[in-house]
Image (cartoon, rainbow, N blue to C red; front, side):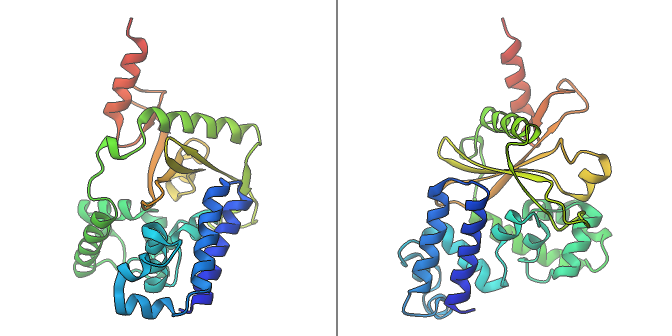
Amino acid sequence: MTNARLAMMLEQVADLLEHQQASPHRVMAWRDGARAIAHHDRELTDVFHDHGRVGLEAIPHLGPRLTNVVIEILKTGRCAAQDRLRGDGVGLLEVVPGIGHKLAERLHHQLGIETLEELEAAAHDGRLAQVEGMGPRRIAAVREILSARLARAHPTTPSDQQPSVDVLLELDREYRRAAAAGELRKIAPRRFNPSGEAWLPIWHTDREGWHFTALFSNTPLAHQLGHTHDWVILYFHRAHDTDRQATVVTEWRGPLRGQRVVRGREPECEARAARAVAP
């Protein structure tokens, strides 16, 4: 992987962000990183080989976040951020060694898996064993790889290391309102879109030190259940963090039935609802 190719991929992410009206600061960060790579006096492949992550982070305008992106590209030839901005979540699964494009498609279509966190959960709850090509050895390898990778990315995820439920639900409300009003840029996802229609609204915004990207879910399960305009995926990160995500849906059972909730953080949503009705 040459510096020219690396720089081009970062520039393409910057172009996508700019077209989708992300903040100028985010766009400039990617462009600065691309320029730093293009003008570096050594191939970054050699820098990484000789000095590892420390050598890459020492390059001006890279830092921890873009260093993660560069390492991902050097190891896999893909950029998950670019895939996501194009509406293709399958590409993210292909960064896991041993999972090629066909197997990633199979995992996505059969199980609706779109993120590394979802892949890790499926590796532990038995669902991966249902997929052709996922034998015991491969599943064990996936568990080991993701345990190490996700632990490095975010060792703990307590609520104070994530956006608050209040912020997530407010962003969900704003995104759905703007999407319904036709105020957002739309992208043409490659999956479940044979006509190539640009139908998927995408929104970038900053809130309380977090950078957010919001999209409706484009998973097989969302299409199957008719929830493509109900389930909202919120990707988020801080300046020197890796991307994580939250999913906001309309609850269909229990005390929060009919209300918007953040999946995995239902107790916080219940406490929030209780505060809202307290005298």
